[in-house]
Image (cartoon, rainbow, N blue to C red):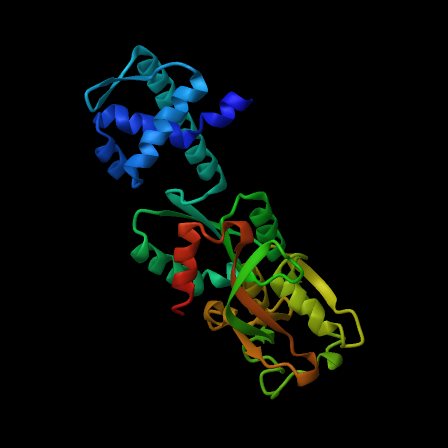
Length: 297
């Protein structure tokens, strides 16, 4: 164990630098250290191995066959470690040639395309892979390492997640264009006990807002249907199959068939939408670039 403690990677790097240059000064410049440091490292390796690695001819240090053998092993060791570091970073997504960005469906109309385009301008060599899902699905992907970042509602009580707020959003009553709710200044959810509702499944940020808003309405809404994406939900509401609650960010996807009406103050629910990633990954250059892009909007 003592021998392996004396033969460090840094000393092997100095050995290789000297073997390549055959000059203490050039080896030191290559590694940005002093010539004294290189000289000490070479002698330290000799002491650890208890054999001569160099012989003196005047002021020159000439490698012995033992030095050549150690240098061969050092090249293998340094390359193996370098390859291992690169493989580990690739698996973890650290500074890889791609970035996997998860997003809520409701951010796919404006926010996501804009951020991806700006990221491409900043880091054109990085390929972007998009993953769409619910808040719960995206959070699970962050923890599992299958997504590098996620644009979603900022999750509470997640100490391992670093979040960067993008904007606050508000829930609205959504009904077909021309419905009896359109002429109201604000909708009283407590008066909607007889209405049919359509909503997203559990796990979506929009469903969380739906449930929170109805928490104070005094009744459980009648659910005619639960669906798996916000675009299907909008189409069903536009087709007159029921009403729902939608965040303001969905306004660009309504297609003129659905309108959003404010909720009365006591039912209003707000969401904070942001960029989220593992705190342990916060120095990843790809994530640093993505956060920089987010900071410009």
